[in-house]
Figure 1 (tube, rainbow, N blue to C red):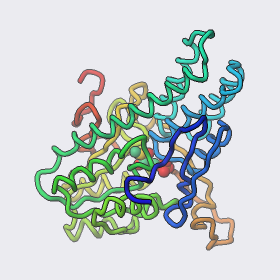
Figure 2 (tube, rainbow, N blue to C red; figure 1 turned 30 degrees about the vertical axis):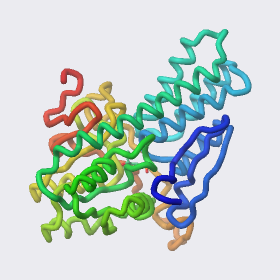
Figure 3 (cartoon, helix red, strand yellow; figure 1 turned 180 degrees about the horizontal axis):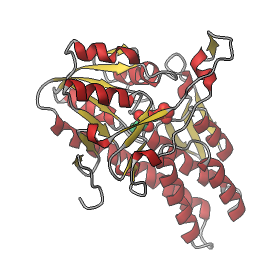
Length: 336
Ligand code: MRU
C-alpha cells in the first residue's frame, strides 16, 4: 500500500469494508461485512476505533440492519446493540441518534435503506470535511518550527478523513512548522506505537516512539514545544476525556509551561454534560495489561486498574481546536 491507498473503512456494494486495526502494523487485513452485528463486534474489539470513526461505522451498521427489511424492531435492536459497544466517545451516540431521527422522519414509501445509507454517507463526508478544516485552523497555534508530542492515534485510523490532532501535525509539517514528532506508545493497546507510527511513516514525518512513562524525561530535557492530542468527549466546561495517559501530559505541560491542545470535531462536544466528572469512562479487561497482541507475559490472576480514558480538567487546556474555531479557556461553546 502507498500513503494514498490505506483507509480505515469504506462502504461499497452494500458492504462495509474495514481494516482490522488490532493487527497493525504487522498485518494489513481488511474484512467485508453486511452484518450490523459484525460492525458492533469490530467496534467492541477495537478493530474499528477512534471517536469519530466508531460513530461513522455504527451509522453504516444501522443502514445494514435494514437492508433486507425496514422493520422498525430490527432497526431498534441494531440501534441498542451498537449503542452498547463503547460508552465514552460521544460521537458514537451523536451518529446513532442522527440516524435514528432520519429513520423516524423518513417517509415509509421511500426505500428506507437508501435514505439511511445516504445519511451515513453524509455523516462520513461531513467528518472528512471537518478534518480538513481542523487541519487548516490548527496552523495558527505554531509560532516557530516546533517539536510536538502526541498520544494515542488521531489520524485516518480514527476518523472519516485525515484526522484531528494528527492532521494538525501533518499540515504543520507540510508548512514547515513542525520538525519532529514524539508519539507515546499508548499502553496497553499501543495505538501510538502501532498506528500513529504507521501513519507518520506513510506521511514521511520524522518521529520517535517513547513509552508513556518517558514523557516527563522528555519535558525535563526541554526537548518539546507543545502537546497536541485528540478527544473522545468534551464537557460543556471544556473538561476532556481522551485516551488514558492524556491527563499526565496536561499536568506535565502545566508544570513545564508548555501549551497543551485538544483537537476534535464539534461532534465531540457534549454540551449536555456540565463537567468532566459526568463522563462515563470505559474500563478494559484487566488481561490486556498482561498480554501484548495476544501474547501473554503474566499468567497470574492479579488485580488491575484499567480505565481506557482519563479526564483532563479544562483549565489545563490552552485551546480546543475544532473545525469552527479555536476555543480558549474558560470554555463556552454555546455562546461563541
Ligand atoms: O480506545 P480508542 O483507541 O478508540 O481511543 C481513541 C482515542 O482516545 C483518541 O485519542 C480519540 O478517540 C480521538 S480520535 C480522533
